[in-house]
Image (cartoon, rainbow, N blue to C red; front, side):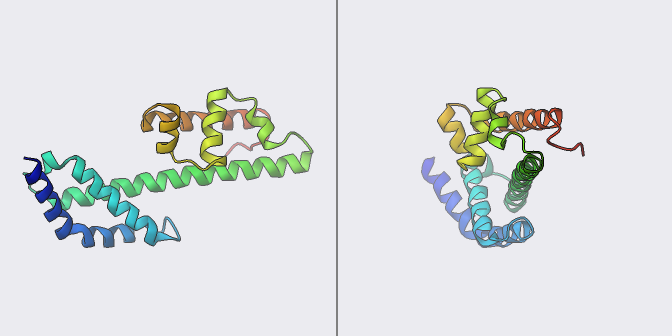
Length: 170
């Protein structure tokens, strides 16, 4: 059975990888300037998902469609993650500008007003530049839990910044 799964996966990879890689490049060209690396990663993530779902895919009537939808969803997640990262950078830049102008507390001082969990996940993600997958392993939680913690920490930081009038309402 495992040999059948491996053979089916190898055939799937051989037949569709180049096409999926080309489509991945098209999806990420406007997301990342270094799109070649990202497109390769996106294609590999798509085929990793295929490997994990191979038992269900062996009899799937539309393998190419499944791969394309999976790749598209992964591209949308990438776009969302990059947008959120950019938003956080904009927030930190806004803090720094306001702090310089007002001579008030530094950005990292604001972090001390967050809970330890919020500050920890924000530091790991933005200052140490760990991925949510790496953070999840460090904290002993699932990747989805790490993403949820990061999202909640961003929201709490934004609320704190608005409360201190360090961030303008949008």
